[in-house]
Image (cartoon, rainbow, N blue to C red):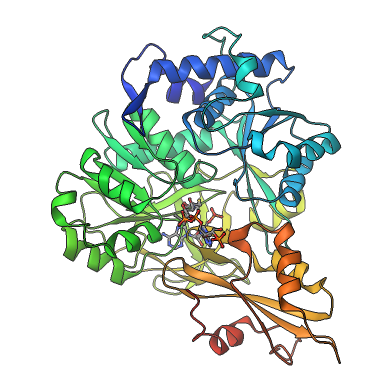
Amino acid sequence: MANPLFDSLFGQHLESEAVFLHLPEDKSLTYGDFLRLAAQYAGAFADMGLVAGDRVAVQIEKSPQALAVYAACAQAGLVFLPLNTAYTADEVTYFVENSGAGIVLGDDNKRSALEPIAKSCGARLETLNADGSGSFADKAAGFPTVFDTVPREAGDLAAFLYTSGTTGRSKGAMLTQDNLLSNAQTLQKEWRFTARDVLLHALPIFHTHGLFVASNITLLSGSSMIFLPKFDLDQIIADLPRASTMMGVPTFYTRLLSDARFTKELTTHMRLFVSGSAPLLAETHVQFEERTGHRILERYGMTETNMNTSNPYDGERRAGTVGFPLPGIELKITDSNTGEPLPQGEIGEIEVRGPNVFKGYWQMPEKTAEELRSDGFFMTGDLGQIDADGYVSIVGRNKDLIISGGYNIYPKEIELLLDDQQGVLESAVIGVPHPDFGESVLGVLVARPEQELDIEGIRQKIGKSLARFKQPQKLVVVPELPRNTMGKVQKKALREMFSGEIIS
Ligand code: MLC
Ligand code: AMP
């Protein structure tokens, strides 16, 4: 094939007038209309001088147009680089600079913040708003609704997704066409997606879950999505009767369960609920089945690998586990220190290998070598265990990471900022239980001798640099941080100290 990703996901629907997206206010968009728009976008990109392999940084609200930019990038052979809309100017600057993106697409209301970023990074700035307007839309409107697909190979880059690291600096995970396509093909088959499915889509489209898992499976099977701007409980309850499947982070399911309108009757026609991106409590799994009769299908994945494991569609979906390695994907549990495989049943680091595993971190060969072994196994940083029946469970993390409502937050990034604040000697950031988000962020500060900390001032200062969802929900001051004999801060001890500190 000339361009495997585009041809398989999009190219097969060029002439289709079947509905692709069901939109608010009873509107809809057909595959054909969606792809004609994408072709115009691809034409505009090519006219701007972007060539195969160039990066397109995109920080725009969820909309059909935002998804069409993904399709346009695939067709024009460009590398799609979606960014969380919550990221601040400081955060975006790093991504644009690091990726060397040739263009930044942003909403008009962020133009003044994005202009200096684009300028300093030598990138072009264009706007595309959630209603489809903007300077990019105006330019694209003048281009034909067909575009000669740029040839690409399976191993060529299709997307960069930035993931933060334990050192505080984000790394661009390079995903190839085949990484995305092979995983979508596997999941479509495993989860039995057909053209008759209607997926309730309320996830953001700047991360693996909403972008690749949900959208690629839909495209591959020629089915449709009820495409919602965000998770809104009332809207979900209103739309459930029209859907056949739903994908979400655990917060989606706990929110649904907290609402009395969420009943068995509302879900009788549903065939599948999928959960991932964060641990689904076994208790939630059980409550969900009691309420609806459906067993949530939990799967496990990550930015660097797409999906690795899944509970079975037909067999037992076991609460508290993430199921079996997907076909074609090898998974082993190893000793983190030696890398040696551990006997069945023991807890160790999860390593995975397969066509799903990314190519490495953009321009970071050392970081890549630290996590991606030369034999192709990727060290996930997750701690797991395989039971006698082969079900994989995630029992902890070997990496310092907080997952709040499905968003990853790396403590180091926040600690580096806190340490720089007036009067702060040192800091430690930990995750504490949160009833809605699973975990939330607590910052623990130690003041310099004889210094009073201005907590509100610190909060405001770090707020300028950090996306809202990463900002500590609470800052507490302690005389000193607990350390082990090597001088390393003992986060476990801190988590125990503040375990009662439930922030809601
Ligand atoms: C929003 N806020 C959060 C938050 N989301 N705070 C902490 N954690 C979160 N996840 C804050 C906002 O900044 C705001 O703060 C307030 O909450 C209300 O904002 P909102 O936009 O109205 O929130 P809401 O719509 O309720 O969003 C919650 C959510 C959303 C859970 C629906 O975060 C979400 O869609 N999460 C999904 C993330 C996801 O797709 N992860 C997949 C990663 S891929 P304030 O103070 O201003 O009021 C991956 C691989 C894999 O992990 O395996 O899938
Ligand atoms: P991200 O870097 O955003 O892709 O997040 C990936 C991380 O999310 C994984 O390394 C896991 O720690 C976590 N994760 C994803 N799915 C699950 C799951 N079903 N259960 C527990 N943790 C999960």
